[in-house]
Length: 251
Image (tube, rainbow, N blue to C red):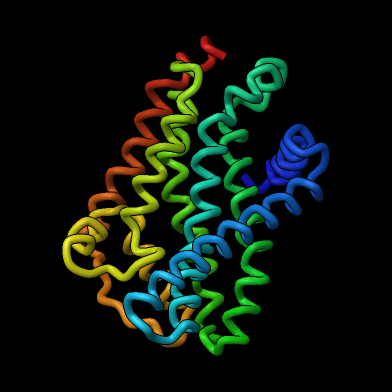
């Protein structure tokens, strides 16, 4: 894998060039897009939060910023990853690289987008006094681990997309269900709590916030997360072994 890193980086830059006419433009656009989403969601839900329950605005901003910083790069990763093989089908056919290395392009892009978006978010958290200076670097490893776990599902979806032609609209729709079933813009209480705990990203989100924020208290729902640690790799391994020859025929 280490020997393939230079090739992977070239493919990442090539993908940016195809999408945005350059990697710098692509990263800049993603930064503007991500920050715009964070600001819009925060402003709207901050107004609703203060209207219904007057409290600390800085607490809610820190809570929302951390949740969106966690979610947005991962959502982009799954959507972009679903179409990565079909969009590079001609290069895969002509090159001896095989399809596997192309599946890592969205993962690297996800890390880039997370890093770029994290800089202004961390500045805001520092100003508000919400950043856990000591533990926040651990939150980066949480993102790395979650991205790797999702890579098994992303690989399955990318292969399914080759066979079914285009399932990205479906993935965008499903991602909205995952988004609203996570306590990103609201507190996990009552009926919503019973839904939140079974979202596969709920426990990673709790971990991420725990390491990122200095005053975040949570009850870790790790037991509900254990089945996904088994299910996701199993899906990825089976899709790779069963679909490999089929994918090459459909590309």
